[in-house]
Image (cartoon, rainbow, N blue to C red; front, side):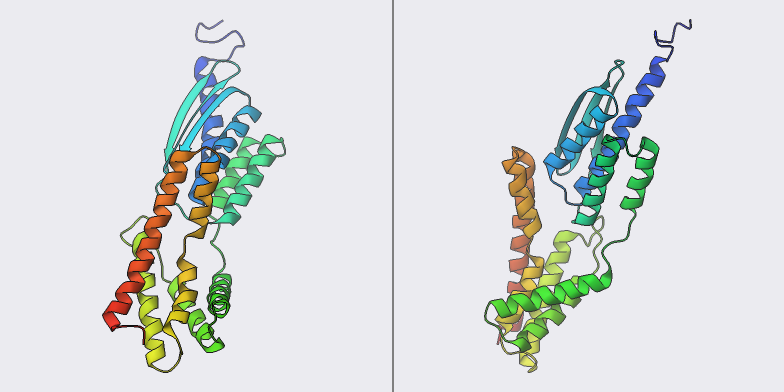
Length: 267
């Protein structure tokens, strides 16, 4: 028997490669979950479940909002440790749900590793939410909050139009026009548009119009996820996400305040 082979006849290099493949697949799924707004506990649990389902004897996983590190030790003793740097995050719950489905099917044996890789790639490159759904959602949300806080239908209509135009401003998370810059530009332009629409006679109350557009920018998902992380004892990640949400809130306030100051008031 070859000295480089184990008792089972499989070389140590082959064992390590198998361990690498298991961990690589688990991290691929976990990374995409984190990129699309999944909780830290979901990310870590996904790695652990996949690892054990694919033959690991021991799995360790640790994640924060920008980094995932994990290791697996297979039943034959093969060991692998990898990490992923997560630079860009957004919110896409459709992708999170699809990735969860792939994870469940992989762990239950419905699909194999090759099929899982293909499905993960398909989800990662799937199109974002249809543009017309974004338009309808933004318009309805902005108008609804204007009416809820006592505004009239005229202001609700103006707010919905401004909200749609505001949310269609493109964003490049990896470039200079990142999420914070985008929020600042959106809030400033929305504030200017609300004030000018009233002065032009299209709207009645700039404050009511602004309420609807502000609600489109509030980082509610980030706040909710941060609380979930902290309740799940992921204090570091929860605090980081809460800090990011607070920064977004401050930027929103500064954007609208700058518009009001620039135009000399809301009337």
